[in-house]
Length: 260
Picture 1 (cartoon, rainbow, N blue to C red):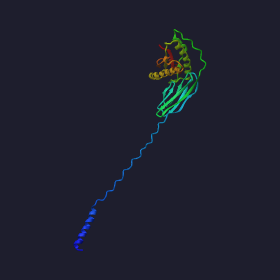
Picture 2: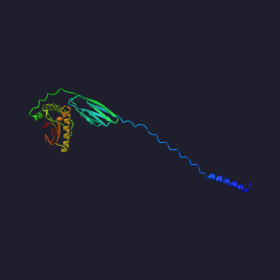
Picture 3: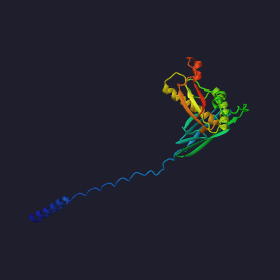
Picture 4: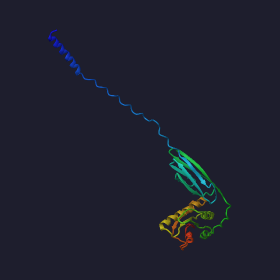
């Protein structure tokens, strides 16, 4: 083979090798996208239904004029009510009641998860009635009040109805129902009074609470609520001015007067 042919052959081989080296290398394929995370299709938990942990009356049996205490505890409720008489209350609490007859109190709890209810009964025994008060005189109602309707007394800085006040108010209820029955146009003013200690503003509030407590007690014993109205005199009308506990006690009172 001549040198020229050999040179031509070598040039051809070189060109083939060179062209092969100039070809683009293939680009690696991109990895496939990651799959989306799984969707949690579990439904949210249902709201809890209200539960009445406690609803009781202590004691469950009383004599007319005495008090029983309702105690309750409710969970998972937005609204709690007790009837008769108490209306809407907090989820946990206690309240004194003075039913004049055997009464079943019903607690109803409402929440996002439903309703719940419970009941508690206070059995009331009625002692023999005291002698009926004399009918009120037609011309002197004030004298009738002075003779038959007594003041209910309170402890210092308190509007709670204590034992002796319960007895007084129970006797008063009979006399008041009698005078209201005999005098249909009459109303009764329940006055709240305080002793001289403390500011005038504070004692006006305390006197109002005392008058309201006495009114609520009488209402539970059957005295018509629409015939009773309350007023507080605070420490403005002292019936005793000595600076002694015996005198202070006389001024801490709920007083009853015929209205206009």
